[in-house]
Image (cartoon, rainbow, N blue to C red):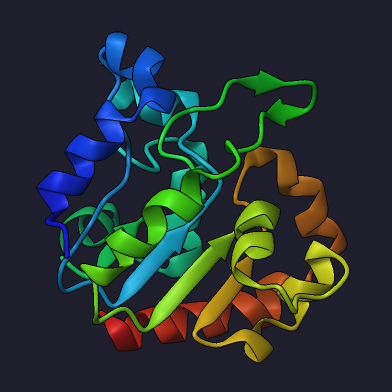
Length: 190
């Protein structure tokens, strides 16, 4: 089994990441050997990548509120890990960020997950993470999130982006039912 340092170096030296490495951009993810909670999302935002800190943006603020954790707990509790489907900001698309690169998660997730054997809750943030980890998901993201309890230890969530304010207003059950369950599970594991 490769070490965390060996995997990090291999990701940086991967020819597919040469442009990022040449620009001085390191892969952005966070391993915790004692993590009980893993967050899987699309990719870092432009601002998170610039800050060199995962979930350091408006979406991260909202995610921490959804989880019911402080910034201190999120970054320093030693119980929360972050592995996006792509460890680099993919660029801007027509309606939001571009999707994560294909094949990236297939290459790097398994060796990273081996280093975190205590994970009990995996938050799947957004459609791309749900497609990758839930082959038996519902037909829509909304239906998958509504049936979150069917997927344990996975916990599907809509992306906490400000772009999803409209979705939140149309789906009040998310705040009333899903978030209290999420916070309860997070508290138990912290």
